[in-house]
Amino acid sequence: MSAVSPLRPATVPPAGDAPLRHDWSLREVEALLDLPFPELLYRAAEVHRRHFDPSEVQVSTLLSVKTGGCPEDCAYCPQAQRYHTGVEATKLMSTEAVVEKAKQAKAAGASRFCMGAAWRSPRDRDIPKVAAMIREVKALGLETCATLGMLSGEQATALRAAGLDYYNHNIDTDPELYGDIIHTRELQDRFDTLGHVRDAGMKTCCGGIVGMGETRRQRAGFLRTLANLPAHPDSVPINRLVQVEGTPLHGTQALDPFEFVRTIAVARLLMPHSMVRLSAGREDMSDELQALCFSAGANSIFYGERLLTTGNPDTGRDLALFARLGLRPMQVTVDAEGHDHGGTVHADISAELDASISARLDAGIPAKPDAGVVDASPDAGQRCAAAGHG
Ligand code: SAM
Ligand code: DTB
Ligand code: SF4
Image (cartoon, rainbow, N blue to C red):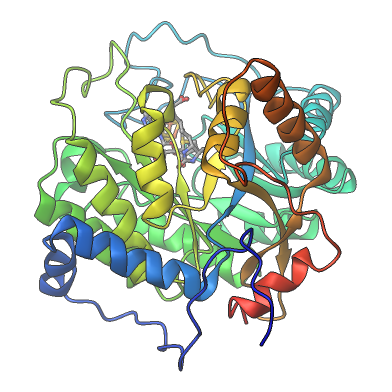
């Protein structure tokens, strides 16, 4: 009989992994969202375990390399020039300044660095400047991601050639609601950009925002649209609307937190191989709500005290949360098919996590015997295979 370590999460055998589907009907997705909450969480947690180690969370850090002054009219966005939100427009940051921030993110334990620009689309003359940032960030040993608006095929190819791993471009919402939220570009424009990104050989990061006043049926339509893309996005950021004064969506009725968890769980069920990111909106979430999201299949976060223009939880709070929940940051490796998989523990953030646990113990805060224990054993990376990660 093989010894079972109490530190290892329970895993579910792959059991003839079902093929990925791209033909979900709205009724099917609605039926999943309508499941009794415990049943939905159970199913999502099971699928999560088939493909990932559920105690590992991928950690990305975001930097706004060009802030505000955007000509688009996205009704949620503090960076649209036409809304009076107090966000000051800036020029594109210098490569040196971006690299400095990337070094800090790496030292703090991020494995992916995402550069965001408040553009409708980059001008061709911006591409060499962004390409230089990508090359230098990549040289630090970080995965690179950018979100710059719509791209042409040539622009996508140039960014890939510079070493860009991921491109973030969201569909943002249900096709039916889309025209109420954004009038300055069509949903089809977004599909076109995602196509250029895939054709250039980059991985896609594509999700959207909930809590914009949509119905559950519209959340089903949003998730269905993501899952029925020609390829499931490699990362799926699920943002909860950050309500910013001055934007048209400020004052929207807040979403029931359980609806948010349901959205995460159904994203996990529809896109089992994807990283589901608990994205914007975490600052206002309780630790308990975030714990439910991780239990429902979320396995990625933005780490660092800022998103683009709005706040994110303090890193100390995130480290304490990881320690309390027994979660570990994952170091991402990419397999031959291009799927992301959790591997070994990232050394830098693990050291911070250890320090955070020691501080809690010194302060007399009891911890579960295994809470936050970091398994840096040489076989830690083997768990992907054991968990059926392909
Ligand atoms: N300008 C580019 C674009 O729109 O593709 C890239 C940056 S844009 C800020 C990236 C994404 O951030 C948006 O697609 C949206 O999903 C998300 N976002 C923007 N404002 C948000 C808010 N107030 N709350 C939640 N997510 C938001
Ligand atoms: C994504 O889906 N969420 C991030 C990232 N992609 C670029 C952005 C969230 C922005 C929240 C509002 C702000 O900070 O300006
Ligand atoms: Fe501009 Fe992007 Fe904000 Fe839309 S979401 S207003 S395109 S920065």
